[in-house]
Length: 160
Image (tube, rainbow, N blue to C red; front, side):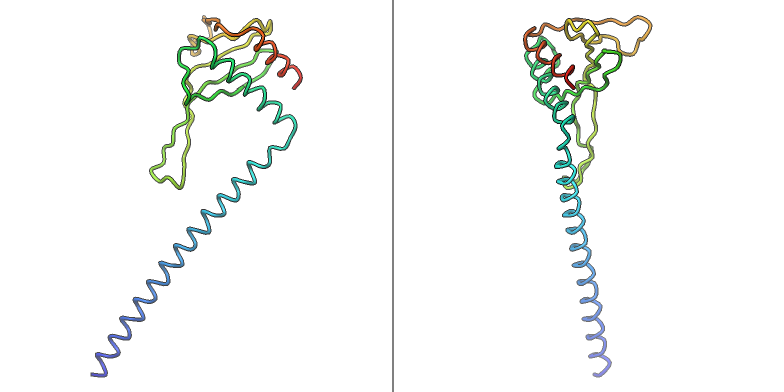
C-alpha cells in the first residue's frame, strides 16, 4: 500500500511539474508578444524627424494624385512610396502588401510591385513604366493627373 501511495504522489508531482512548465511557457510567450508590441510603438513614435514628416506628407499627396489619375491598376489596397530620388528623377513604387504568415500574431509582410512610376527632371507629369525590365528600350505612358495638385506635390519634394 505504501508503494501505491508513493506512485500516486510521484504521478501528481510529475503532473504539477508539466503544468508549471506549460504555464511558464505561456507567460514567456505573452511577455515576448508584449515586448514586440512595445518595440513597435517605439519604432512608430520615432518618426518625429521633420524630414520624415515632409516625406510622408509628400507621399500622401502623391498617393492622392495617383488615386485620382487614370492609373488602371489602382485599388484601395495599393500603397505608394517614393523609392528613389536621383538626378531630379523620382522613381515611385506602387505595391500591395501580403501577409505570408499562418499565425495572425506574427505577421510576415511582403511587398509585391504593381507598377513603377517615374517623374522626369522636367517635372511635366507622372509616367508609368510599361517595360521596367528592358533598360535598352524603355517605354512610358503619361498618366492623366490634376496639374495643380501635381505642382503642389513637386513643391513639396523640392522643399525636402
